[in-house]
Amino acid sequence: MSEKLYEVKTYYAIALDPIHVGAGSARLERVDLPIIREPGTNIPKIPGTSLSGTARAYTAMKTSRYNWKGEDGKIYSCAGRGGEGGEKHCGKVDPACPVCVPYGFSKGTYSMQGLAQFFDAQILLFAVASMVGPVWVTSPLALEGSELKGDFQVQDVGFYPLGEQLKGKEKLNFGWLMLNKGEGKGNIDLLPIPEKVKQRTVLVSDKLFSLIVNSNLEVRTSVSIDPNTGTAEEGALFTYEAIPRGTILKFDVIYNSGQFFMVGGRKLKTEGCGDVGTEWVKTQVEKGMKLFEVLGIGGMGTRGMGRLKVLNLEKGDC
Ligand SMILES: [Zn+2]
Image (tube, rainbow, N blue to C red; front, side, top):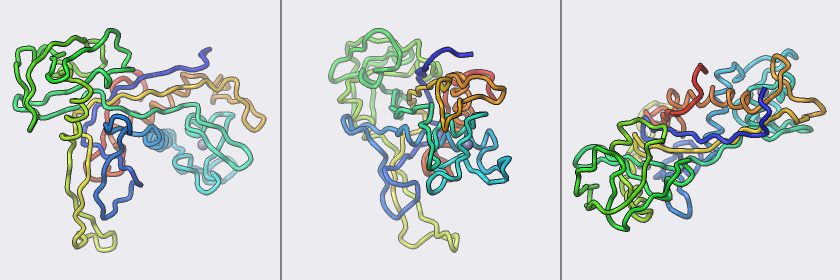
């Protein structure tokens, strides 16, 4: 059993579709829909709350806790917010619910914060179409916290190829922006991401990164469908932004051990009377994360959007 009090894991993920996580609710309205941005850098991000809410729903599906009947005959739903006052969450701690314990619950008199804490997903490598095919762009700030050792440097204007395939290029053309190769340093060999992506990655300054990202976001136009008639609503065209397919994101999750927790006067125990350690929490959460690549995240999963493949899940977990 795990003796650790907590474990921090950094996840890397690739967008299989454009991803839209809107600033408002997930409901489609007749308005233009921007995506959420980091205030300081103006770079789009996926909030940790969206990741945890989605993972929660998927863990519930995987563990048959989406809608289920408890031994007391009550119907519970451990996904979502649990209704008013959280009465739909089972809140069971012995044996621990694979949804309520990792993601938290609140049931009137007793509650617990989730043992898994999700942080925002940041863009690590941004996919851009160029004259020479897809290129991934990153910057020193974007790479911070990616567990890579060594520093990253690049001239203010210009690109430095981190991957072999673009070493021979003197110029790169990103739509309206033409960049020359410049001096720099850095190495991303150790990132757990596809080799073909690494080979086509270039480093640019933080300023240029924000510019390139914001001018290459997907902007799509869509039509609102009237739910009553199933037809397009008149004048209901709207545009929305999305993080483009191929983009690599990273996010951290802290897994806390529950072995010293008491909830409602009871100790947390797993099904087989084991300790609720960091490994157990991580296993439940990763069951849900595995479905990001099938069912997607964000509010537009039904429109061929939002599938996100997490690249470094533990092996052997179905
Ligand atoms: Zn539950």
